[in-house]
Image 1: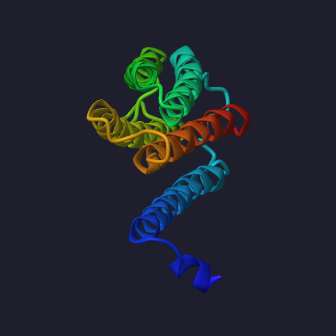
Image 2: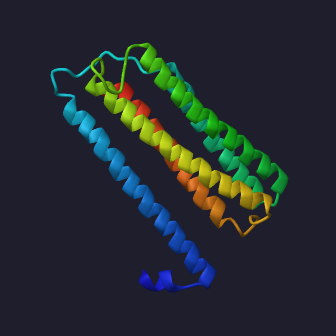
Length: 195
């Protein structure tokens, strides 16, 4: 196994190292979110735990947006890998617009929560909703990091850095994006079903 890791050109070795670093980062993020959702579960035994909250409609809209953005990112990657640069760039721009829309939708969701009387802190706050605010905001921050990554991919795409056989940066970007998508689906379902 270790001999296989050492095979290939310098570029191939660097590519494997970058992919490994990305996966280390993803695993550490998974552990963080597992910790926060575990704390949520442990805290649910408190007497003041709220079980009858309603998730904002905007969170469900943002779920559709991030799912769609994963599809458009996949379309971009497919197009570029087949040498259709212009179409790939268009799909990347659409993905970016969907990512921005996701973050906006998340903030609209926070506004909905506040309008329903749910606050993050203060005398009228509740531990349940504080967890939801915290975990959702942290995910949104990671989506912003994903959008920065997407901007780098888009910039490199416009410069002609990607194409058939030259897809490493785009592959790293889409892997992180899909991870954020799957993580959000887990979180929204977790909040919906675990009360």
